[in-house]
Length: 290
Image (cartoon, rainbow, N blue to C red):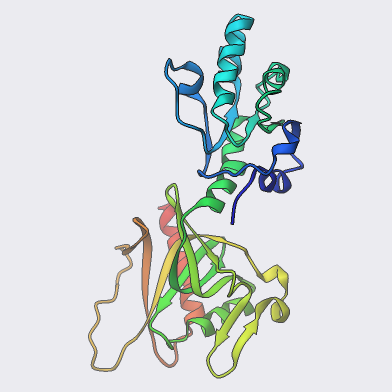
């Protein structure tokens, strides 16, 4: 499924204004994040076609307005010839109309915003990165507890989905069950459901349940930043395992080349897994403050 300039505008139309190129809003964005046209404007050589959304801010505006009208037109056309999917002008780009004049031939969509470039990076840039990130499927359950994305893993049948149901009754949030789509975005792991299992959870002996209808749409979160992995282990009486006893050492699990704090919890009668997971999240938060 293609990701287009119109998708960005539809998501952020409150903060974006179409200045030009409205007829080309179906242009496809192929690369994540936002780019700044350093070499395209300042460099002496021809660059490859631009496949990401381009931001023009104070740096680009100061450079272009320092040139003579002829040089400014030449540099602007050099950028437009590379057919970027969209130009997004920040609040610092004070006079966009010479861009519009040069754009008559190229029809590149030009959007204006009242935000600065750093604000765009953490809003529109992050949104584009999430949409274009390469997701891989991991088995488990993903919930959000006290603002922390908790990935619950363990062997099939150990009770991951049942624990998630307990956490929902504690007013925590549900993201996905069974198949979790996980992608690395910068130094963060983002998890979300697949299109097939969105809003559904499978409980053995009952079947597939619709979480939205049972608990309400307010208990659903579309994605979560995974900050802790909890592994449930069924320990037999004669099976040794080296569990953490003092809590001083933090274990980690590597997912998509990112180290995530990893808690291993034994499952047995008399132990409420939901309360143990809640305690693990609190422990992680406290360790961050040490």
